[in-house]
Length: 317
Image 1 (cartoon, rainbow, N blue to C red):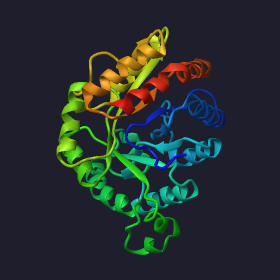
Image 2: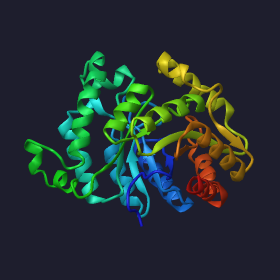
Image 3: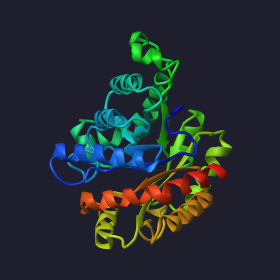
Image 4: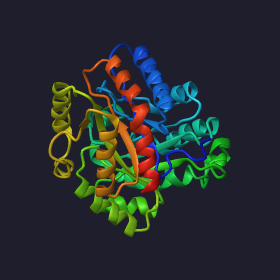
């Protein structure tokens, strides 16, 4: 039984929409969430981008509701949501009402965002997003813990948050961001390509500042022969829009953990967790350009050894 969504020590799977029409992609995500549940994952995450950005969703809160309805044991997390995209009160209402429908099964993550097209569609000036993020984050966090003042005091789902606060984390790529997260009592989420050395430094800053939430490592894994050309194409896409600051923090290569079996993948992941100061894991499989059957085959292999070994390793660390 779930007692809290996205707790420290959990192992989750990141889902990405792949090929086909919109309804086919939604059904694919439902199917993969069920596979993740069957494989023993604690939860799943989905991410936000707009204008048809490959693999991402313009409506992760709505899709999270579909995934929660399609599963019964795992938690679901739109993570990260692009906080400056919407008026903060409307975003808090959406999250609170979904959380009230699925108590302890919804977690959320927040980020400022990095793609100008997202904010062009939202009619939010791109040069304002960082300031808007910094000012809105404390308000949204307090509201989703049930401490809202003003009109939302009367919202029934917001009131419920005082008894059942929404689990929250925030993307953190700088010392300032880690200290901000610690001050707000939020867990932190690292860039999937960030090096263990940078992660260890930021994890230490977060802990030294009083942070005691989950510190989440994201890594792509592949059991067997990897889809090399598709991974290379995706890396080129990442390089096309990532900031120089983010790139400076990346490991060499594409960050994919490749091995012939789940046991070897688990060993490599647990070593990276230890060397990065992270205590919670988010696994990704999807690569743009591969078909659903390849993803399904990968997830089926996870249930035998990979997920049980990861859980055992995190529990004993």
